[in-house]
Length: 56
Image (cartoon, rainbow, N blue to C red; front, side):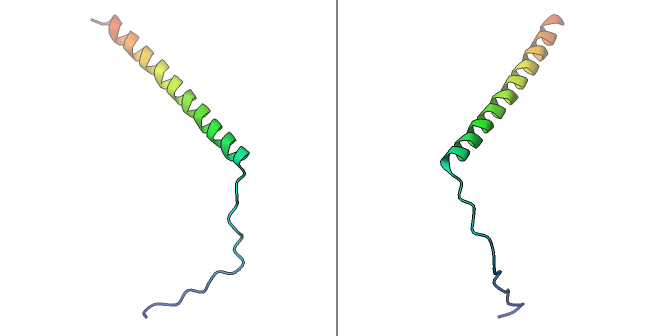
């Protein structure tokens, strides 16, 4: 009723269909990145804990 009517966008490319292998590889890469982050956090925590134990 109010406002401007929007024109339908023509010529939009169809949504990309991912094949299962690329999706699987993407998930694997995400898990690997998550493992790296968890490892870094573990190292920082160990360093922090060792630093606290030295001081009474």
